[in-house]
Length: 436
Image (cartoon, rainbow, N blue to C red):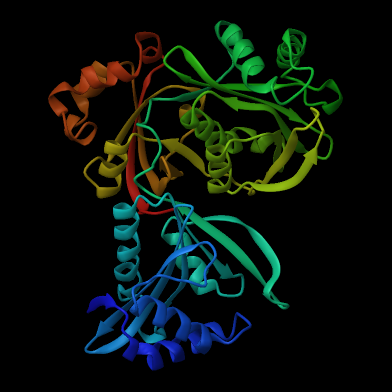
């Protein structure tokens, strides 16, 4: 099988493939559309008719001389790229044609410094939807009755890999402690006050007073459940949850100084809060990266509220309905994430935070690293008093495969001595799914 640029002589086959694949889901003349994009791509890619289009690029995949897949993408002047369409002949699906064509997109993205890839898929086209989700695309929203009056259109995107998250830090999401309060106070006022009138020292004191009532399950008590995202002793993010009547849970604030801390809070809070209600929502003015994190974790924008909390500021309501049983989430540094999914690191070591103590044999865990995720199953949990005792029993090469001789130093570089005293939990993992 090979992939090559489209040629003018390919038009009859391409036009028929587009008509057959798109007619069930989209209105319009697909053969005419095929003629335009084939001719544009075959004649230098410059699209004189596209107001925002910098180029139209089309590839075909051939097997034994027959076209079995087509890919067209539109490059925008804004540094983005739209896939429109990606089609694989039905009898060739699942045989590697799609990844072969998408490799051309990723090559172009790297070479031309494209920042985002996006596409739209008919909500009725479950095959295409499942494929793009499996390739790491994130649903951004739904346009009702968009290309046909009887079909909604789902918008999906993927941030280019070369942009990525910053290098991963070791971030822990923990209940608020007294020693965190002054950092939390400064963080909340710094991040929230520009967008919300009334956020000041008094407001933060009310937050802490609500936390003192955290044992109450009466919504009229307005108790607060507060977690902080910390790297070492530094508070990088904070979330306060208020259970409401009818069992939605409002997160206010949900703020951070660091996108990884924000991602850690968004990933772990559903597991902590499921016993308190069926839905999370927040009022926020998120950055573009925070929007991506929310969408990546299944949150949806529910309302736009101009002037709700501050004049000229549009506050957004985001929400997520929680599943009956929420899968635990664990964030792992890139080198260890790749090793776990490759099977060379079957052991993950954590200290005995309450969230770790709740993990049991048979649990499934969603591993996350930046924008990537996979599913593992816990085959066993073993507990030790400290790292040294653990390393006398466990294979260091299964914990730190790239540096087993210095496993003790690596672990103590991640967890301070007071954290080690919480106890050392070894999770024996088996890969269930390499992409979640």
